[in-house]
Image (cartoon, rainbow, N blue to C red):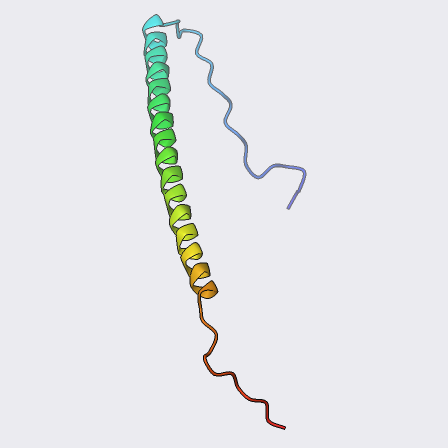
Length: 90
């Protein structure tokens, strides 16, 4: 095998000089570009809305966890010592 020779060759681009500029194709491209921008802005707005909803849910969850932690801490503080103390055995 010769390593100097490529095993495959790339096709050469075809240049057709008879193709003329067609402005209707440009109009289609511009319209598609505008549609893509509109779609992107709608998608962005939906993403922002979802993020805001998620943030609100996270805050609510954090508040519930904080309340639960405070209740558990208050229960620990209000536990009574035993009525009878254990006597030390010698």
